[in-house]
Length: 148
Image (cartoon, rainbow, N blue to C red; front, side, top):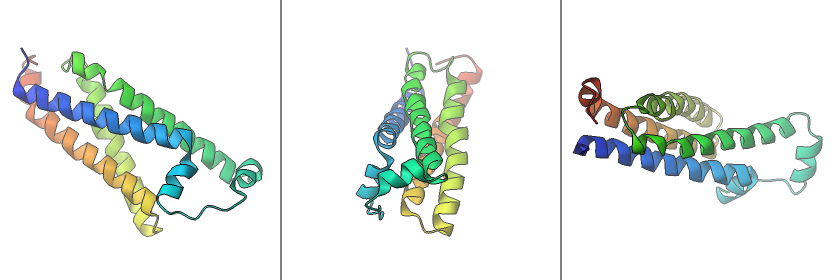
């Protein structure tokens, strides 16, 4: 039988996995759609700009690649639901290390260059980091003793 604290960790992992999958899927399907939702100005000839611009084209495809990674990380977050003790390292990497690094870059640069989308994503990753770190902290003692 799992403890209530482990159930809290599992709920946090499930919520962050769903959030990662949703954001990853949105950006993978169309980064421009997400920008349009947030009111970012998009040029009429954006498709030609993506195809022929030596700088914008790689950024567009890198964004889609980043989105695929975020989606995959979200899908992998189902593993700790079955065995939270075994996959605790996965939770540390996808719920603590990645979001703290991503939030720092996104918030810092989003504020510096006044990009709302970057700040929103940064705050989302910061929230995932804080909640996951708290859930890992409250289940740390049980994990060290080998309990779930």
